[in-house]
Image (cartoon, rainbow, N blue to C red; front, top):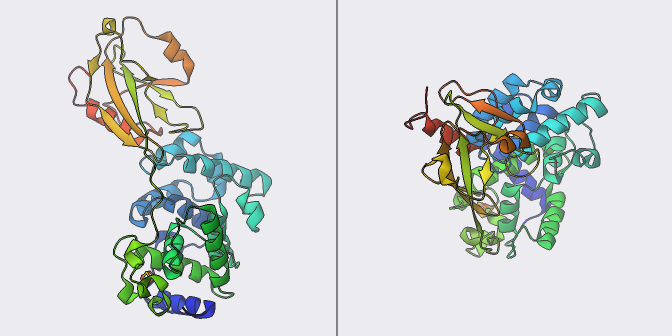
Length: 347
Ligand code: SF4
């Protein structure tokens, strides 16, 4: 193991030669661009984030434009990235910064962490990359690098382990070039110290890495203790009016797919009097459970269900016209595209 100074010096030297310097959000290291990229990069890989980031900042080039935007449009540009709470929090935070901070990001860890969707690691990334402040980060990549470097044998999501990792991250963060250091340790985790098959032979930290010395690199960090995810079943009712359009409803603002436009969900299949046609089932997994959905096409309902219509904001969606600017959950979007080829769905 080597000293903290040696750790950061080796990492920075490697970063200068091999780090990623041309990611779209690196062109403008403002708090706004850094924040958008950091939120998108949570649970999503760089290559998937790039086109979303480019479309997003083209439409919302600064915090004022984002704060003034309609949430539906923000969710629409987020469709496919998943974890939609991120988009809702992004919109809420933009409005808070616009109203409470005159459009300028707060510059302290505490104030930044008080904003929706910004945890300690994201706040650290923004403060170090965009403001040059010595603030550590501990995202998934960094947790993996440190768990291996110190050969930590407990699950990194466990409270005590996470606390110990924060202490180490704090000590390792240098006093100079903090923004580069933050980028460097994220890059090392993403390109060399990868989840599977870490490229230890190319790693600048190899000489001090405990996991490498003990032959444990492949086995660390230890996985989260297994917990069976339950499976939930539900039925999606696709009400279709005489023009062939499908009824969509906006989901409540919080919870799964919050604020997105989806199909009415029921515990039961439609009654036979509705002459519903069963479509191919869809499966979707969330972090806490699996969802199995049976879609039912209910054509030309003679008796439109006013209860469903009144429950939430609704709209009639034409599957053949260009998608409107609304956010749709990925499986629902797929189902609506599939409907274009289903007999009985009129153009
Ligand atoms: S030597 Fe291997 S396990 Fe250790 S930090 Fe480098 S890539 Fe990761």
